[in-house]
Amino acid sequence: MKFNKIILGLGVVLIAFTSCKDVVSLELDTNSVEIPEAVSIYDLDLNSFDLTDAQKERIITLSSRKDFNIALQANGNWGTFSTANSNDAYSLMGKFPEDLTVKLPMGDYSSTTSDNMVWVKEAEFEQAFGNNFSFTLENSSTSEDFSFYVPKKLQIGKLGAPQSMTIQRNTTNLLKWEADPNNELGVILITYFSRNNATDPLKGEIVKSDVLVIKDDGEFDLSSIIKDVNQKSIQFSAFRGNAVVFDENVLFSVVSTDIHIYQIEEGE
Image (cartoon, rainbow, N blue to C red):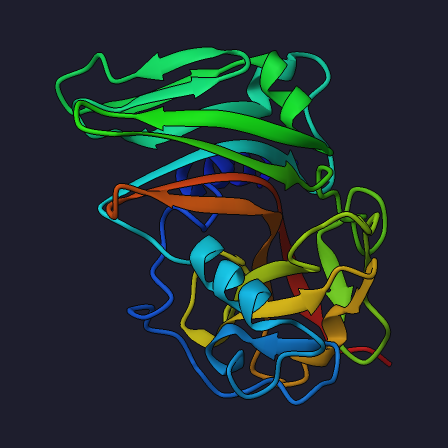
C-alpha cells in the first residue's frame, strides 16, 4: 500500500500524542463537537460525561507535555500490531534529563547519547498493557515509585473495503475497539486533522481538527466529525493509557496508539 511506510513513520514521530503536544498551546479549532459521545478536550470543564474531577485531571495530564516527555508505547498501524518482528510495535522513547533513570520491570533505562534522546524497542514492553504496572523514576535528587493500571492495547478496526483507504461521508463509519472496563480514566482520546485535499490525505489545508475525549465503550461513529463537504481526508490517532508527572518537568506515559488515514468520498 502506498501510504504504509508513511503511517509507520507517523507512529514513530508521534510518540503517542501524549508526549508531543500541549493541550494549552495547540493551534487547533477549539469549537465543540456537538455530539453526545465526544467532548473536545478543551471543554472537559463544561461537559465531562460522568467523569470525576480526578479523572478529568488525569486525562489532562495524559494529553499534556512537559520539558521532558517520555512514553512507553505500543504502536498500531491501522489496527495491526507487528507480529513478524514484535520489537517494531513496542518502544520506550523520548528525551531524558541527563540524570534520569527509568526503572521498569523489564530493566533500567537512561540516556547514553549527547542529545539525551532514547529509543529502545523491546518485545517485552507488551507485558505492560492490560496489567497493573509498577515502576520507579529516579534522578540525582529524588526517587519516586508509581503504580497504575495500563489499559489493554487499543486496536480499531479498519474502515472501508479491504486494500482501500477510502470512506464515504453520508453513511455510517463506525470505529470499533475492545472496551476496557478496567480503564481508570474511562476514555480513549482521538486527535484528528481533516484536510481539503482529495488526492493526498497528508497534504492540503486543515479544515477541522480537535482532540476528542470519547467514552471507552467500544464504538464511535467517525461520520459525526466529517460532515463538512470541504473535508476530503482525515488523519487520526486514537490512544489510551495512563501518565504521571515526575519532579515537575518529566511526563512519563504508558500508552497504546492506533493511527488511521482515509480519503473521504461523497456517499450516495
